[in-house]
Length: 476
Image (cartoon, rainbow, N blue to C red; front, side):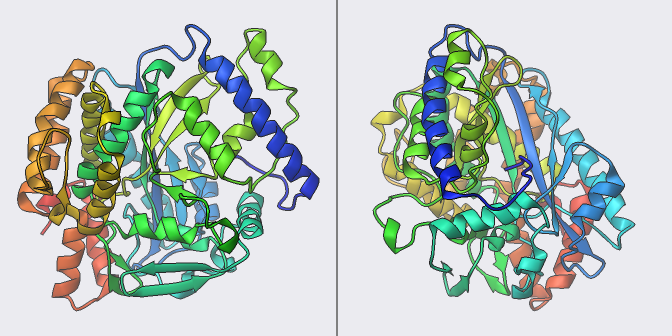
């Protein structure tokens, strides 16, 4: 969805031609993935960080365009809401000290955005959901004024004729647009993988995210209510669910964990997304038939397929990138932004380490439904969740399971060439968070309880702590 569009309206003929292009490019991708040597190379890690802009009172500050112009940093881009920005961090090799490098760059970005926002009367905030958001922050006027977002809004409403209904615990909202997606900010991790390893790594990421998310919750408050530890998960799924009465046959929404293991490879997931989800942004490129380019030994751009995949928000999704000779990545989208850069890189280390460790076994013999259940239990209950795990009988409290999984994650990262000091620093942050029971979500709940729901005070105190860089388990 980072692709720029020059218009927001499309004809039915363009929708039809776009669908034909998707089928052509699926065939091109299948042939490319079968090419010997394609996508090989050392694993790399990248990340995207979404941030809120807030004013001095902790309220949302809808000035992302002015901020980008003032910052002049190509790593920054606007997001759906005018109070959101996104930073694309520089990919780094997995071997070496990747978490130290990602942490340093993310800290640099947060300080840059905060400094520039200061000139606009505000600051930066890495948090899953901003507690001071109100219903008045979700209107057409708060959507970033760009053709791609207006086109996305039109495309989703073309597919879903009914209003969006959001139900989370005792909260119920009816909205006409996808603007509620702007309530959520994430820390999205990318792992480059060779095609022959994709299925195992992807399945392992699906399993690993449950316990990692349980230790990472940071969005318990929305519209004055205490909801899930990661309310962001439920909100994103319901605020962009394109299944209306005409599409009840489809098992998964447009934001989804999925419903089965991958058994063949990356092409299986791309094919599922083309088969199950109607296009919403049919922007046609000028590129000729990509199949011929592949047959001549070239690297196709697959613009239409890549754009379509950017409008299906799987919590773990495949990414095809024509850069660097062409390669595949797994984009891990379920982690929240914040509380600090140290916490986000610690979450990254745990998620990647556990993914690498679990990729060594065939997870398709394990019931997918249990991985699915883990994910949503972790989102709802955080460290109080009861989780299952391959090879274990019954369910285990999340803290006990996490503490037994950390050594596996450590061993896998060391095997991948990450230096011990980088691994230990990151994973010890997770360990201490689990031992103290203080995630970002837990801290927010305690603060709100002590200060009787003063969301503005909470945001100001949270921001002071977040900018200090001190991990959340040490916050007062």
